[in-house]
Amino acid sequence: MGFRMFPITPKTPKKMIKYIFLIFALTTMAAQNNYKLTGNEIFEYVNKKSPLYSWKLINTKTNKNNSVLYELKLTSQKWRNIIWSHRLKIYIPPKLDKKNPLALFMISGSSSGKDQLAFAAAIANATHAPAALLQDVPNQPLYDGLTEDALIAATFSDFITNGNPTDLLLFPMAKSAVKGMDAMSDFCKKNLKINIDEFITCGASKRGWTTFLSGIVDDRVKAIVPIVYDNLNLEKQMELQLSDFGKFSEQIADYTALGIPEMMMSNVHNAVVIGDLVDPYAYIQKLKMPKLLVIGANDQYWPLNAINVYYDKLPGKTYVHYVPNTGHGLGGKYERVAAATAQLFLSAQDKSKMPETKTDYLSSKNSIEVKYSTSVKPEKVTAWHAMSKTKDFRKSEWLPVEMKPAGSKFICKIKKPKNKNLAIITEGHFKDKNNSYILSNKVKIFN
Image (cartoon, rainbow, N blue to C red):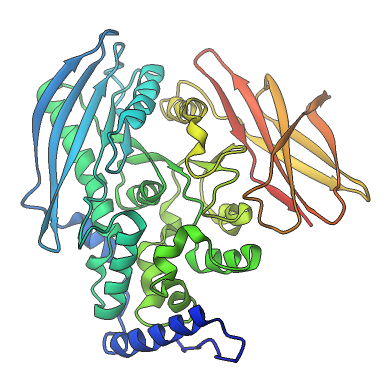
């Protein structure tokens, strides 16, 4: 690919000048590599036999509701001469459907895992299926205390300079998930006489990224629930941040400090192929399984319009669950996310169905008419709307309007603001014999 560089002018900010010189320096080193993409890199890494793979039962606890929690220590791999080990918790609900081979598999980081375990247990109890919580993805801190985005960014920088794709942290993160599923299957078969060979994976933020990758690299994954990772098609997402925010989000400062977005957008080898290696969008045809995208409507990381960069390109069934007036942490509103996830799980078990919903908009001079239709009768339908002078809605307040039934549809009108952008999200509240849950339709923004 050709190389284009940002021009330096007297008005160029000092920080951008620093990036440009950094790009020049890294380009000189990376030019010696000019990595040749095969498209098989992550599959080869994940599928390569790991001689160190092992698991050991550490503790067993029977809870008051007669559920059982097994705590294992998992060794997943050696990456860059570092042996990765994980806490793996397997939860067996009090009522278990042993005939169904499907399990929930949640991917988590370095926290205590208390909230994540409660989330997984709630879904297991609702679906009568086993659940697992894999922690320590990635193993961290590494390399002088680096964690999370700082650690991922550092490995991106390493790849740019040395051209070794296995240096990218998302590779061992994806492999951790696969080895975790292996361990859950092995343990349940050996110790509990339960056969598990299908999974629904979920995880938040960097683990949401890993959730996408788990579905791409492992055919046992039958559905995915990526939480607060609204960032597919990396190059277009970076362009959108500059367009809607006027700059890159402060939340990706670990990447911008190393000039990585600029290098990826400027076709700098080896930066230009990072997306081809770790962006789920590069493997989009592998994402045919049902998907539930969970998004905080005020997430500080992503533009509100981020979903519209990739949603229509996703194959298979894709569902959305927005949590209004919450950011990257979803405001602790995990119960509603668990209920939506449980519904996806029940549909994968053929015990229930996911509604097919649609929202149409008719714009007039002073208002927007919103029409919502669905294949399943909802208890109620809400249209959330927010306003912003720019396309940055991160600090906007979302206000609800209850939509009224009109024949087979639900309808409302929302007044257009003067000199502001208007965003609308519709959500249906559903209830069947197994579950009560909320599903959204993707956001629509009016200028």
